[in-house]
Image 1: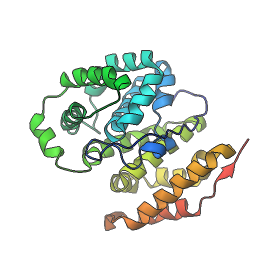
Image 2: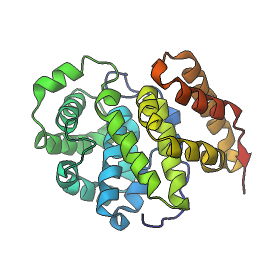
Image 3: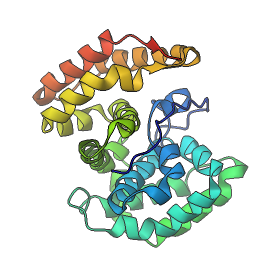
Length: 269
């Protein structure tokens, strides 16, 4: 993987959208605890083709899960949004064993969501262009109607895809990129815990390495970040404790929960 600058934590305080249209936890003020969207935009020209595909998959997941946060970040670098939108058909249609069966229904469901989503005036042009582009990529309206009946369709259709993508990127990453991917893992864990457990259960070496490095990668920053990062950690721990999980992945759940419970924020200059 290409060597990049160290990632930085960005935090947004935005109103959450209705859950059916994306939004809710971990969006709003927690949304920027992870996802590599700003990093992906800043370094798009330097990414390999494989990296563009996996990062694009994660960008689409963020759009489906936290549309306000997606639009905010994309609006900061409009020329790269244009480039990504132009290249998206090629990136989405590149054969991939992780997503061949999921792409069509996910894109159709995402299109359906965007058509019914009210956004701020400054994002309307961006949303219109996304709708126009997605309309050319998928026409599985029946699948979209069925999927929209599920409250957590983003996870059931695309969660496994982006988590597997992130595992793949972790395996070929270097030290600087691990920080970005660790934050991605946290966002995906908070968004789709069962999908996360299912994928990482088959990747014990990646899970072990991530948990070992997690304090230094995602819970060490300047003092100004401590209140928000700690609030995110405590909320995530509480949710993981109280939500029901597939007993098949109980060992993964316990390992993740134990690590997150015992982590203490470290202030760095």
